[in-house]
Image (cartoon, rainbow, N blue to C red; front, side):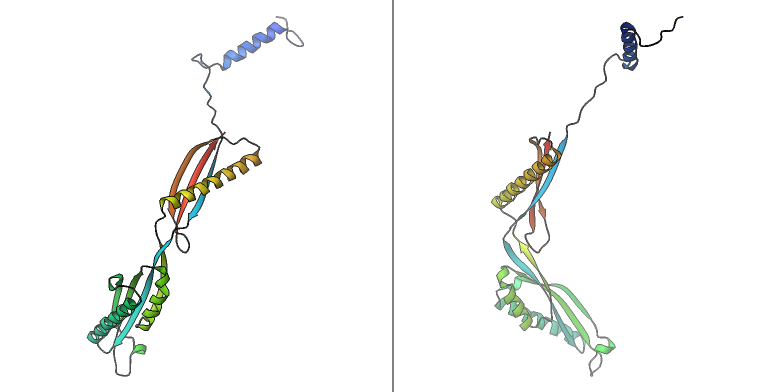
Length: 221
C-alpha cells in the first residue's frame, strides 16, 4: 500500500464526501423532516371602561343597651324602626334597608351601669342607595336617626353597554399595535399581520371604573 502525502486528488475527495453523506443518511433512505417555528410577538393591553355609577351601599351599625335582655331587644327594634324612617325621608325605601347581623350579649363589668348588670344589642344594617348623589343625604339621615356606626360605603357600577365595550376594545387594540410596532422596531424585525386576537371583560375593584376590556394580539413574522 502506498500512502499519498499532501492534498487528495479531486476524485478521491469527492469519494470521501460521498461516503460521509451516506453515513448520516437515515436508515429509511429519506431525509429527516425539519419544521421551522415562525417567530411570534404577543401583546396584551387593557382599557378601563367608564361605566356609569348606579348607586352605593351604606353599612351602618345600631347599638342599644338596657338592664335586661327583653328590654334591650325591644329598644333595638325601636331603634331600627327610627333608622328606617330617617332613611325613608332621605329617599331610601324600607325594602332597601336590611339587617345583616344581630348580636346580643351581657355587658362586661366595666361597661355595667350603676343599676347593675345590663345587656347590649348590636345590629349591622345595610342600606342600598339607588342613586349615588343621594349618599350624603342618606348618611346624614342615618346619623340623626340613631346610627352609632357608619362602617363604610362601596360604589356600584352598571355593566358597560355594547358601545362602551366596543370603544374600550378599539382603544386597547390601537395600544397593542403601537406597542408591537415599537418592539419590532427596536428588534429591527418586520411586524406581520395579527394572527390571534382574544378579548374579554375583566371585573376590577372600586374605586374607579369596575370593568376593563383586555385584548391580546399575536403577530406572526
